[in-house]
Structure formats: C-alpha cells, structure tokens
Amino acid sequence: MKTKSPEIKKTWYKEMSVYQIWPRSFCDGNGDGIGDLEGVLSKLDYIKSLNVDAIWFSPLYPSPNADYGYDISDYKNISSDYGTLELFKKVVEEAHKRDLKIIMDLVINHTSDEHEWFKKGREDKNSPYHNYYFWRKGRGKKPPNNWKSVFEGGAWEYDGNLDEYYLHVFAKKQADLNMDNPAVREEVKSIMRFWLDLGVDGFREDVITYISKREGLPNGFPLPIGTGIEHYTNGPKVHDYLAEFRRDVLDRYDCFTVGEAPGMTPKLAKSFIAEGESKVLDLMFHFQHMAADCILTDWIRLPFSLKKMKKAFSRWQREMFGVAWNALYLENHDHPRIIDRYGSRKYRVESGKMLAAMYLCQSGTPFVYQGQEIGMTNIELDSLDKFKDVITFNNYRLFKKLHLSDERILRITNRCSRENARTPMQWSGGKNAGFSTGEPWFYVNPNYTEINVEAAEKDADSILNFYRKALKFRKENELVIYGDYKEHYKESRKLYVYERKYNGKRLLVICSFTEKPVRFITPDGFNLKKGKLVLQNYKNVSDSNVFLTRPYETRVYLFED
Image 1: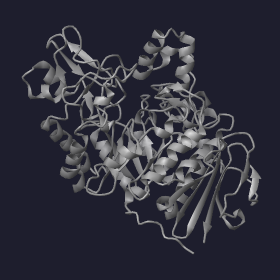
Image 2 (image 1 turned 135 degrees about the vertical axis):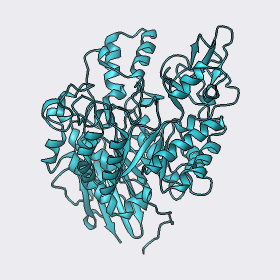
Image 3 (image 1 turned 45 degrees about the vertical axis):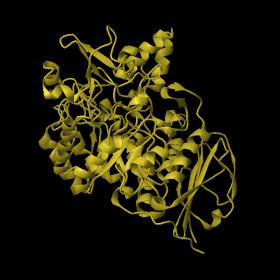
Image 4 (image 1 turned 120 degrees about the vertical axis):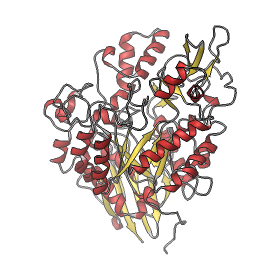
C-alpha cells in the first residue's frame, strides 16, 4: 500500500544544489596569481556540468583582506583583485543563460575599518556615522567590558584621538555595526536592493545571528576565546531586524536567504526558518555535524565519532521535516578538507564518494565547495610563517601561552587550519595546477599532479563524475528532495544507514566509515534483490541481503512499491 508523505511547500530553492566559490583561489584569468571573475567566466560550463543550479560567491567586494573579503570597505562594488562591476554583471548574465542562479555573501555584522562609514565616524564624534558602530569610553584604563574577539585578543580597540574604544567581535579591522541604529538598517536594505536589482538571486548572510547586541553591552562569562558571546548570539532584536529586511526588501524579489549561525540548534533554527509568517530566513547553516572530531572549534581535535556525526544529521533531518528546510554541506571556506577529517587519505576516492552519497541523499539544499568535487585534501606546509590567516595567527598566540612548541603548533595548524580549504583549485597537472600562469597568491597543494579536474574528467570512476551522477539523481527524483527520513543501526560506530520515503518510493543509503570489513544485514522491509542500485563506489556489487562491506563502501538503492 502506498503511503503519502506530509505535504511540504515546494519551491525552487529547495530543489537546487549550490556550488560555492571562494574567488581568490578558484581560477585566475589575468595571470596575476589571484583568482578572479574572468576565471569564473571561463569555468561556467564546468560548473553547469556538475548538475548544480546556483553559485554562491564568498565576498567579491573591495576589501583590505584582513579576513580575505569578510572585511568590506565598499558594499556596492567589486574588488579590483577580482574585476569590475561590469564584469560581474557579465558573469550574472552568462550564469543566468545557463540557468545558474547567483548568490552573494552578505556581511553586515561588521565592516572594514577602511569603510567610509567607519573613517567618517572615527574622524568626528559628532558625525552621524559615529553611531554606525559601537564606540564607548573605557573603564579607567580598561576596555568598556571584558568581551574577547573570536579572531584576535580583546574585542575592543582603543583610539587615542577620540579617547574611545570601538567593538570588533572578529578581527581588529572588522568593526561591528550598530544594527540598533535605524540608519544602519536602511543602509543594509539599500545594499540588498542594489545587488538584487543587478540580478542576484539571494544572499548567504555571514554570522547573521550576531547582529543584535544586548543593551548596555554587559560583561560576559569568562572564556578562553569569545567571552561575551552570550550577549550577541541570537541577540534580543535579531528576529525583528531580519523580519524588517524581509518585509521591506526580500519579499519583493524572487530570492532566497541562507544564514550562517554559530551555536545553532534545531529548536532555535525553527524560530528563524520555520514555514509561516514568522519566517525571517529560508535556510540556516549550522555547525553541529562538523563537530564529530572536535570540540568548540576545529582546532581542538578529538578522535572522529561517527555516532556524534549521525546524531547531528539525524536530529536536523527529523526536526526540520515538514517544518523548515535544511542546508546540507560538508566543506566550505572555514573548515579543513572533509576527506582528511571524516574520510581517509588512503582510500581517498572511495571515502570521497561515500561522503558525497551520505549527505547528498538527505533532505535539504546541498552546497558543494570548490575542490570538494575532485577530492582535494589538506596541504602540509613546513613553516608557520607560510600561513596567512588571521585565525592561524591568533591560535598561535594562544598555543604559545600554553607553552606549546612551534613544531607541535605547526602539526596542529596543518591539520586544523581553514587555509587547507583555501589552496588554489587544482584544474590540471600543469604549471600551478592550471590555476594561474603567474605566481599563485598561496601555495598549491603538491598533490595537484594526481588530483585535478583534467585527470578526473578522463576517469569515468572519478569522484568528480560520482558527484555529477549523485547531483543528477537528486535533481531527477523528488524522493531525495522531499522524502522523509529514518535512520537504521543508530548504535553502529562504523555504519551510517538511513532510508528516505516519498509517494510510494523508498531509498536506502548505506555508508561505511571504516576500512575494516563490517557485516551488513539489510534492514527489515527491504530486499536488495528488488531494489535498483543507483549509486555505488565499487564495481561487482552482489544483491545479497547480507554482505561484508569494503573500505568506505557506499550503496544507494531505489525501491518502487
């Protein structure tokens, strides 16, 4: 008997897959060693070939690059590193010709200290721009409160000319905007309209749950890093401000929003993204499934726990179903490469495919980060002075206070730094991995001779072609998009097995997270002999209902009642 799944509101952003570009490292079109929009233009057909439907650009705006684009000095222009506004318009036009939507990064918790607003507010206390930011007198010779920056030191920077401090929750050059000021919110709306009128299809909103600070900016609970975070995470007026942006701007366009939200839980997420009049965002990036091998931060590593990862995925799948919509990802610009975390370098191809099937077959809108689709891995640098990231510098200072040696800090950094995700994209086995004809801005991973797009294109069994197949299957089957979710063998420390069900069709997803053989017994209600094997990472697959898994094996079966 066919069972009908609960009705879920269907819309285009639930049915698309997104490719994330970190522009500085994607493709260099003019030979200066920095990725740019000319490079993107040259790769649009490649991106389309992946069977994705949209491109999310990490910040393209002018920036001093204290945090590589997340410190914006002009919200309504394109960085000269990447091209011009006219060139961006051409990228949008050419992407739309290929039915690819364009999503911009919207960074409105803070600006660069080189933004005109900040410079004018710093010059004159009586300027209206002074109140665009949080300027405060100190407590004697101490900062206004005890908050610590997520990126470097204290969260307050002193200005001797003004005899005041300004707040920066992130780097010193990233001054927090005072969203309580209505003029600031009007600026945000103007920025949104500017890009939407240029044809942009939506925004990924950076640390969006930080934009409302508790009135009075009280002292925070002392922590090694991020003291004060309880006073600006999901702050008192964040829903009001996001509702205002939605009402006044976003609802007037056919666009979508995904918010980045550190510390997010399913219960909290529903208050932002649950279907209905109170919805202020469409999707939410959370971090819970990325904590299966660490605690608090990627830099405090623990042994990988499959049960911890499964618990996070399953919780979001269950609690969002029929209520709100998930955002699915395994990699982005802020995390080391996933094969080195949850997979296996020894079984790179097998585990890369398994990880793809594991998350692409879940309910939600999937995001694929540049290089993930060819199985790029972490880089290993031989000296700490070769790193460039502000977080790396901050963690170095913290580790030195703990009396760690430089050798040990280097080992930790090579394993944990987000710079692992920022090495140049590996297009070919030629000079500079085909990324640039000039000297690349950052180090190319030496394994580019083996791991690159050109080689993957020639190999029918490559990770790249597996991603194409999985994304195509997803696109063509509403079961994968709108079906419900049920996990099997929850207590297994080696297997992740779940089913999806929708309008008489079922999917069984089998993923092994070990190189050791595991005896798999097909769950009750399934007979592999009656299913169609739609995705696999090994050839010569038997249809036995009991079998021993091979290293990092994955199988996805489709059943029609």
